Image 1: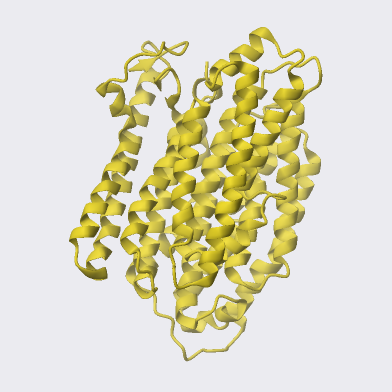
Image 2: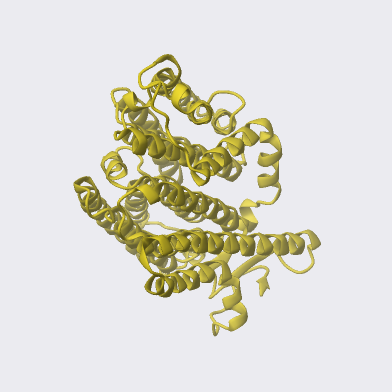
Length: 522
């Protein structure tokens, strides 16, 4: 049922409403089927087929999301039958273009991670390959639930589904001491994150008298928050801190290099993209609903919250790039690159809707998509080189152009995108965010973005120099399987496509997204 206007009353959850949850439901059904198949298939060779079943489930879920988006777009274009937003269980779960666009990015990232796993895990000592695939699907479902949540309880359920499954995925390589250490650190920091988030949610519930995000916003706008400003401020700060850990934003980023180094490359790529994107989606929904229209007589809570996000963004960009200058281990370098990119992704959230700027969501999705492609592609190249050479340092890339010329060329494109140079998706993603910050008058942030990008040239070009200007190991060829090569070149071609036709993609996102209709819960 497509509703228009206020949220419907709580009613019985019907089968017709359950169909709206088909994308998430399909992932859970496929995960259950994988458990049975894992018991039936003989040996590890048979379990490789589970990866293709997982990929089919992700693509099927993506098809359902696209089909629902087209249906909502048709309703919105008609203008006579509703807003095109689907609300389930009294707006505790929303299906709108905000959530659907993020779900497509999550599903794309997960599909690339599965393909990456099929190409790299065959040669890796991973006895729990079946468990890997059927834990990955609930993790994606958790991220999708977070994107669609209109209620704090639903949001927390999605968060824990994502968190618990990734805890296991990080520690799955039993023979690696670093994997066990990474899992322990990730569980501890993840528990701390959940504690902060629950604490913040409890304050929001106390202030608004409801767990529904729209209902809390309505109470704050109609009844005011006189005398409750300190409670609201504490709650919002705790939420930002908790989700800041999930995003790996400085100063909450200390866990990221160790966890990424200890996890397998596919899991590290999944954490860098899907977990980060899901947390950003939750912050975006909460902040713009609860904070944006709040008028506090005790202080500018909205302004302070957006400033806090911008400070986190600036700190992440500077800390990530400056710390990476002395890093020579590639997986840790990519983790610190993720910290810096978390800063870029936080900018559209923090600059709010000031002046003539209103394309926050378009900037976020465009750069998140570019970040997904260049990060997963880079992790795939690093995994391929590491398996062939035996280590993941700068020296392992020495002479890569002579050992695997096409892989070196692909890595060069990905590095140019990570550095934010022209004709790549990373360049235009940063340009859109930078122009948005300039339109909002945040010139100090523009300066920090430019400075951090220039600093990053040092370590990205250091990798390129190793690939093309060093001759060590020229006689040692690096094998690249067909599946691995497909992942790398899908990421490269996608990065170049975003760099060649950025305006078309950016306009498409903005044309189908409405801040009032899709993001705000009323």
